[in-house]
Every structure is written in C-alpha cells, then in structure tokens.
Image (cartoon, rainbow, N blue to C red):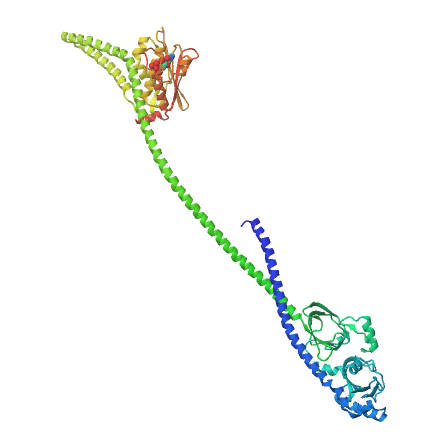
Length: 627
Ligand code: ADP
C-alpha cells in the first residue's frame, strides 16, 4: 500500500480505536461500578439492619423502664400526696438502687409541673433534686402523649444521654413523669461488632452516636439561627459548638442512599476501617425514635476494581479491535489478491485470445505474403526473362545493323580464299609446291580471321546469365571495337582510347558490358554520320571502388528534349528502320543490374558523352586466375 494512502487510513483508524477503547473502558468502569455499588448497597443494607436491630434491642431494654415506676406505691404517693421528706428520701433511695442495678445514668421523678421530686442522684452534689425541668421536651411529650424520648446533654454534668420518659397516671389522673437517662455508651455497646463507620443522628440532624468519636456532636446539615436559638433555650446540647460533619454528597441514588465524600478529620484516630474518602451512605429511621441510622460503606475497593475493569475492558477492546482490523485487513488483502489474480487470469486469457487471433491473422497475412512473394518471384522471373529476352533482342538488333558489314567482312576473305585456292591448284599442277604452301598458309590465316569474327559474333549473341564476375574492362572495349571494326572503318572513324596500363577489373557480366559498349559506340557513329572525320573517344579509369567508362563523340550532342527522354524505351529520333529506341533503355537496365549507373551529357567542347559508373572488382586478378 502506498504510504500516503496508508496514513490516510491509519489516522481515522487510530482515532476510532482510541474512541472504542475509551468507550469500552467507560462502559467497563460504569458496569463494574454499578455492579459493585449494588453489591455494596446490599452489604450496607445488611449492616444497616444489623445495627438498627442491635440498637433497637438496647433501647427497648429501657423502653418500659420509666413506666414501671408507676407501679411503685411510694412513687405514686409521693406524687399524689403532700411533700413528705421521709418519703422523698425513701423514693430517692429506691431510685438510687434501681439506677445502680440498671446501669443507667439517672432515674428521677417529676411532679406534674416538671419539678424533680425524687432522683437517684439525690445524695450527690450535682443532684438535680428540686430542679424545674418542665422545659425539657421529654417532660412535655410525656405529659402530652404519655411517653417521651429525647436525646440531650445534661445541664448539670453536661453528660449526654438518652432520656426516656413516661407519664405516671393513677386512676386516670396525671400525677407526674418518670424519667430514665441512659448513657450513650450504654447504647454504643451494641456497636461492638460495627465493621464500617456508622452514626445515629437525631431529629435535628445532630450526630449523637458514632463509631468514629470525632463525629459525635457534629451536624449533618447546617443549622439556621432559629434552630440554634431553640437549642439554647432547651439546652438540649448544653451549648455545644455543633460543627458540621465534613460530608459532601456527590450523588443521590435514592431517598435514603447517596454517594458521599467524607473529609479527612484532623483529629482522626486510628480506626480499623477507613473513615474518610468516598462512601456509599445508607440511612434508615430507627423505629420508635425520631433518629436516623446511617451506615457508610467504603467505595475505594469498588472504585479500584472499576478502574481496573475499565483498563482491562479498554485494553481488551483495543486488542480485539486490532485483531479484527488485522483479520479484516487480511481478508481484504486476500480479496484483493484474489481479484488481482482473477484480473491477471482475465488479462492472460485476453492476451492469449488476442495472440491466437493475431497468430491466425499473421498466419493468414503470412500465407498472403508468401503468395505475394511467390507471385512477385514469378513476376520477377517473368520480368527477368522478358528483360533477358529484351537484352537478347537488343543484341540481335545490333547484329542486324552490323549484318551488312559482317557479310562484307566474311565475303572478302571468302573471295580471297576462292582466288587463292584456284591459284594453289595451278601452282600444284606446276609443281610449285612452295608457292602453293604459301597460298594455303594465307588461306589458313584467312579462315582463322573468319573464325575469330564468327567467334566474336557467337560470343556476342550468346545468351548470358547476367551474373556479375570480375571482368577486364580493356578486353570488353577491344571486343566491342572489334565487332564494330567494319563499321568504324567504313565510317572512317578515328578511335582515341585512353585506358590505364594496368587492367581495370570491373564486377559485371562481360557479354553485357560489351553489349552496352557496342550500343554507345553505334549511337556515337550514328550521331557523327556524314561527318568528314568522326572521332570516338573511349576512356576508362578507376575511382575508389568504382570504375568510370566514358564514350564521347563529336556529333551534334543531345538536345534538351532528347536528354530528358534518353532512356525511355522506344524513344528514337532516327528514321524508320534506323533504330527501335531500345538501345539506351536496355543499356541503362544492364548497368543498373551491375549496381552502377549510366548517364548521357553534352561535352563542354561539343558532342555527347555517355558515362558508365560500375563497381570495381577487388582481387579481380586472383579470382580470374583461379577461374
Ligand atoms: P536508337 O539508337 O534505336 O534510336 P537508342 O536508345 O540507342 O535508340 O537512342 C535513343 C536516341 O538517343 C537516339 O534516337 C538519339 O536521338 C539519341 N542519341 C543516342 N546517342 C546519341 C549520341 N551519341 N548523340 C546524339 N544523340 C544520341
């Protein structure tokens, strides 16, 4: 994958992964927290029930205590009758004994106006004998409702306690109120088993019982001024400072359950359980009282567990996501590979099909080409044959033109031979053997001459192959001149031959080279027809890898019109019967076959000059010697 594309994909993928891990972590945290909280709530509820039950049991122990005083005759008489010091002492003594046995703080009896008539602490200096306690709510409650319960701090000793009061009624008439003050320590005994912080707050929200000593006489809610004034009036808390408990509610789960934070107290003592931090607070009213019991369950473990589970969920989900991404990548990769393979196969099939089609096309084209080549070869062969025929026809035409001269050339020796042979007979008859022999020698010489001529003619007329081979140019020039000898002599033409001493070896067909030379010389003679002293100049020279042969005459030269059509077949300016107009066309074809060129120009000093440019035969002599 390209780098930019990968980066484009990786960015959002990474963000997605982080978001997923975060979400999973959050979900894990919330789930563990809610599960842990549910568990903690169940445990807390169980504790709450347990603490409530034990506290209730403890209070109930004293619930009927004050009412039982109404069964005591002395007490009733003390309340009903006139003041009698002896009876007061007796009742007080009785109450003193009773207090000692019950382990309560104090037991006392008030008359219907709220004045203390007898008390268990009658012998002590801080006795509240004779005190008017009508202002105490427990008195009022007992008078109004038959019984009263009240938590308060004693006015004399400042000792906190739980006051249980009961109206003492005789024959339907309220005689007074009996009060039992129970020590808080007495109640707290029931909390020996407490394994989590717990507190009991009274109806004013003042903590009266707490498993943490520092919490005692703190308030759960802020007290307004009016309440404070009321407390001053009733001296319920004996003017204690009543500072607020450092408790902050973070979330309320239901009416009686909330998540709270307890601040670390400076005076905090060593405790078996944590007393500060995050807690689940569960509250329930204490039956038979206006109090509420609150149990605090520490959340630290749940929080730790929730964070651990969150981390686990985040890591797990990240791992799972990476795994899924990898699996998906692998799947995509495989799919791509499969697609690529299919595309490749498709391309291969297409290619194969195209190759098949092209091969078929090619085969067809090849067949056509072969056919064309064959056709062309056939045509070339035909052309070559036609050309050969043409060359041959050209030769024959030349021979035709030379025929008169040749006949003359042959006639002359024949006539001479006839004369000589007749003379020879006569000399033989005379017995002049020597002269006869001389005649026969001359005849032999003449026959040789005729043989040479016919041999030259035969060789000229012979059909040649046209295949190039090393040829001595001088020899071809001699042969051509020899063939035209009669014509040259008749025309009285002079020959000027300019050839190098050394043989010029050309790569060509000797017979055809002679034919071209015969043609050019014949044309030169034709051009100079009727001139008093016609001259033909024949030059040959080597030039690098070429040989140049020129045939120049001193005739009228070439007009522009003639020059432009010089090599056209059947172009002639000669009279009917004078020429076919094929000589130069055939000659130029022959020279071209040699790999050379033939051109006709006017000589600057007059007359026409034909130049033949043909390839040189390197190592011609060696080749010839070998032949
Ligand atoms: P032919 O000789 O049968 O006419 P050629 O092809 O040999 O055919 O020559 C074509 C024509 O070129 C001649 O008719 C003549 O007009 C012109 N020609 C050829 N050679 C010469 C020359 N040496 N001088 C002037 N004209 C020439």
